[in-house]
Image 1 (cartoon, rainbow over the protein chains, first blue to last red):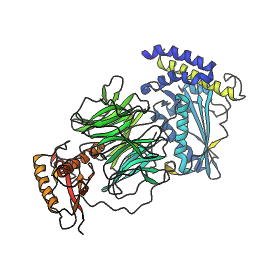
Image 2 (image 1 turned 135 degrees about the vertical axis):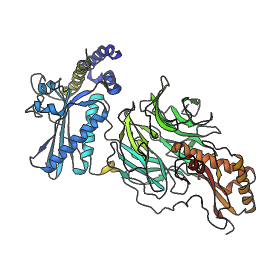
Image 3 (image 1 turned 45 degrees about the vertical axis):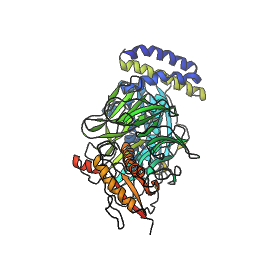
Image 4 (image 1 turned 90 degrees about the horizontal axis):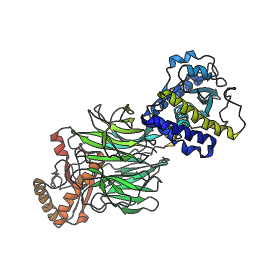
Length: 436
Length: 192
């Protein structure tokens, strides 16, 4: 009901935005909030099959089907759209990008329409995608992409993110990736995959352990813990496959790297001074600052999105619990009080919520805390462990790992714990990290 | 108002915002009410590229020394240093562990040419991240015991394997109690 009282305000602000377009964007946030909240209000999208030209081109037809199917699952996954039942599309006849037949789409309940066309041109494929607002009888977006059969999924992801951008002012997450750890016998290596589990690529090829990957904010580097030199070291792997040690290390534990939002610092935990403490590292020159001073274990650090606060896990009161301190290491205060084992805190990109792993009746489950009321909300329950939660860059989904099937696999779910979806197969897949 | 109505209005208005932006950029057909929107996508063509994974390159395989399997040590002194065990989620030394450590201490005093590595391990029931710190803390507890009683800190290196190297990979109490441990490995003999 509170949303009803909200709407006239939105209308006023939007009217204001129309008359002053250059100032309009910030005012539009009210509308975005209306769409994104729990996904209760969704856009009814008509997504008829894409046209393939020239007629008879198998390549164009297959591309049309693949892109259409990937686009559909991307947009459904985003939570902003309901796809209008395709059975009704046959009621709309003779439409084209020149004459989309808006009234007929309105009649079958569509708010929004996407028309797409793939064309085979010189053994390459061209996609033209158009987004229309049906009741407004307006074209909102037009895009052209070119690629080969190997890039059809990424073309669909890019177009999906543009469609989401039109409705929310923020790019979708369909072109993002997930890094994770995959076990091969006694060894563990770092892999990456698309956000939907496709395109799994092995990055490291060591006969040893590689653990706890973390993406740089620009997605061009991954920091992780490597045992290649016989002792656990923090290393940074770049997109081109080059690996550097994060700083000279002498063999103590250096673990759980986390990048700052500007990509210039890494938080990590280390026993370099004789006990597990939290440190920050300036990557450019290797300068290290110690942030915690406590004889207990301090581990699993994570920055708040604005960089002003740091989450970490400490057993300073007898069991692992999550604490928040200022970025300088001052004012540590306890965040979790429920349960005897809480770890792996992760800050939502918007900064208002935290997810973490909590042990309940001997099993790990994912919990969420809203920083306003600090009440722990369980997002998972039941059989198996669920661990290592990591937020999508838009804060609407969470990726995690679970052994609910008997083997560890990577899953994603909404920020409300709904629609858990398995992304990997074969077992031994843990510690996912979502790129920014 | 029911929800879809409200939402439709919001959508129309949001589109008006876009329309305003569109129109201000160049000549466009007149009112959308009278003329269908004939619009072409911008002529710019995006090419995401053929490569998978956004251009990420895998590392080439490098010859890496595999770590020696845990629980074994090399040389004449194989097996003389005994493993100590810990309680769940703990890193304090239990009386039994202190007894074992005292024997290890005497051997180290009698064999001053040997350097050792202490490996800290955990059972699988913690998170992988916290277990790395816990395994480390267990190795530190053992090292501190030895250093306080006269063994040079330079002779001892520590390493944590967290829950990654279980002795017993079953999922029961008996396996877990064997896996919560610190092992002592002889890594070099300085007299050789």
